Amino acid sequence: MYDSHLHTPLCKHAVGTPLEYVAAARERGLAGVVFTDHNPMPAWFDPQSRMPAEQLGLYHSLVEEARAQAPDGFYVGLGLEADFHPGTTDYVRRQLEAYPYDYVIGSVHYIGAWPFDHPDFTDEFDRRDRLELYSEYYGLVYAAIEAGVFDAIGHLDLPKKFGHVPPEEAWDLVEGVLTAVKGADLALDVNTAGWRKPIGEIYPAPRIINRAAELGIPVVLGSDAHEPEEVGWRFGDAVELLLESGYREAWVYRNRKPEPYPLERA
Ligand code: ZN
Ligand code: FE
Ligand code: FE
Ligand code: ZN
Image 1 (cartoon, rainbow, N blue to C red):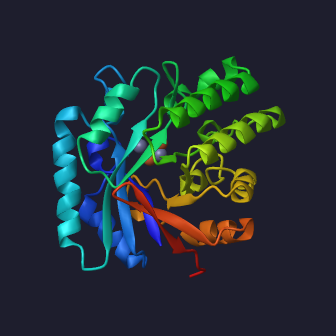
Image 2: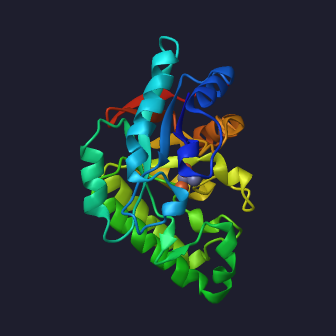
């Protein structure tokens, strides 16, 4: 198994060196990891939760150092969790073309200027119609799919993080987005961080995972670890859920190409 969603302290809200994440992954019996720290964005976009562009080279070298020190056969991939935000796609495309990444997650963390997954700004949920919120969110996810620069879509139902679950009427939006994910040959980030958040549910919800399985959408397993202790978080439960949904394999990316591996109970 591989943990394909890990952060580093360069994003300013994670702890632990890449070497410590790798050590934790080896302790947990994983076959490899892919670092996907928050990408540098144009300077005006959310500078407080990501590395500045000047540190991208440092990020590359820290991950490559961890790769060089990992034992033979243990995979250390270099990726990014890239934000999708309207008006920034050309910047991100150029960034991704400029270095040989292994894997790129496309994530929506903002609706307009509102970082809806930030714990300091949850009061905004009370001002918004829930269906309208999910409609705006999935509109942005749809645009992220259309951007054509990502390998997978991150935490597909992130607005539920603090418990604001989608209304039943939002299901049509999910169905449309899943169809677009399939049509664009993208994978889904199956992200166990949801089990550590107030919602207490994996991203995306089991119902979405079930439907993704029916549509034949590949999955990439990740913990979204922001500290070494979170590496491989509840992967046993995630594998159980994926097997129940009909999945028999997951993907890990190398050189932006998927490599399937079998899902097996530990
Ligand atoms: Zn983060
Ligand atoms: Fe994220
Ligand atoms: Fe993340
Ligand atoms: Zn994430």
